[in-house]
Length: 171
Image (cartoon, rainbow, N blue to C red; front, side, top):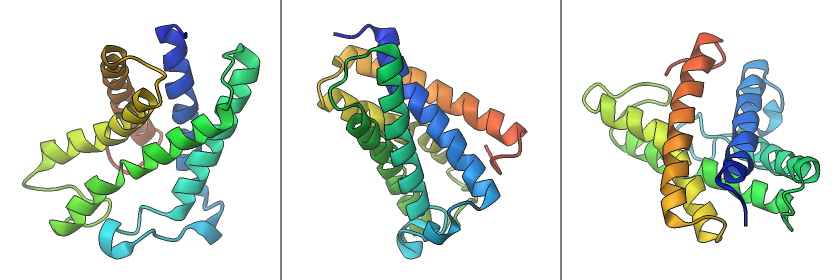
């Protein structure tokens, strides 16, 4: 069994790094050949196959490396990281879908539901990742809730930081 701090490292550290790397890739237009929207109609132009590919694969590789360095003894570290990366990306899609249905353009803010969508933007992927991690049996429900709170707080902090570094357009 892992300590709670190990769960934080297993779940959050690779996702943090893979998402920052994804932001850098977006800004530098690397891998532009896979920068294809999943569905412009359903999710807008900002949800791309490149995001799924980069976040999932990099997250898997980072967890694999961390498993070697820190001896977490995860039997399928790459695949766990990959699944958590896919979960991160998948759980962002319903939010984008709702925005498109309400006529909110990709990258724009809702004028009438600003607080709701701001909270959803900062918690949707954290919810998905922690739900999957819990369902895979790695963590107890109370610890999953605590990890969700920490994940969401970190997402809010990192979003603000990335805006300040001009790697992200808006909070």
